[in-house]
Image 1 (cartoon, rainbow, N blue to C red):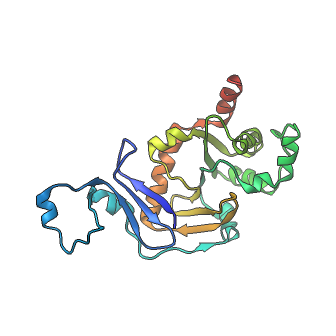
Image 2: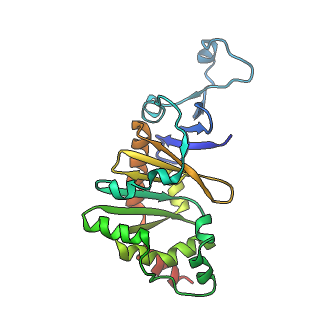
Image 3: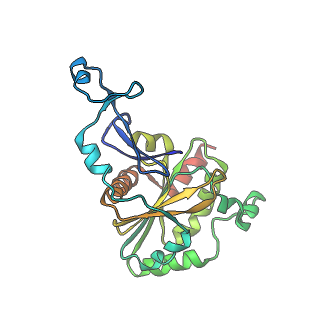
Length: 246
């Protein structure tokens, strides 16, 4: 079973940190190992394979509370939210590529050298225009590697169409994201109250999403959004900077 980063109270990118053991209700805790002999002598029922770490109480109260494990649902379950949200739909993109992009006709044209910066509106962009016209916001931050992966180059080249429709898309280097302690998974955050976390397989195919209104999950997503948005670069500026170094 894999681990999912939940949150950290560290400012320097190291411990203490919490992870969720995926597929279970267990939490893995990262912290400074307890070595004080007096403290170790007071611990009860210690098994040979056990170890102990110290973490701030705030780490547990902010990120660990949860009443029950959530189940994965199809992405189609949240399709209505892209019209029904009240003010903000915010996305964090963390992967180095997406299967849906690679399987698209646009990908084939892009690989053949076509300019995909100005595409006609599709259903997604038409909805973005409509929601933005009503005063709502579509925003996303894309983590990027240095150098860019092929999938990231594709998104950068195709981004202007979405920006023209009304999305505010920004880019953040992965190294900076790691320094900021950002999550390593994709999610949508709707109206700062509902988180839809993506689940992918090893081929970058979306298997579904896990929905949560748990206060700890929402707070972690809001904190990630605020940090990412503050440090990310507007996609037009980022594209210009990448072009100037090529």
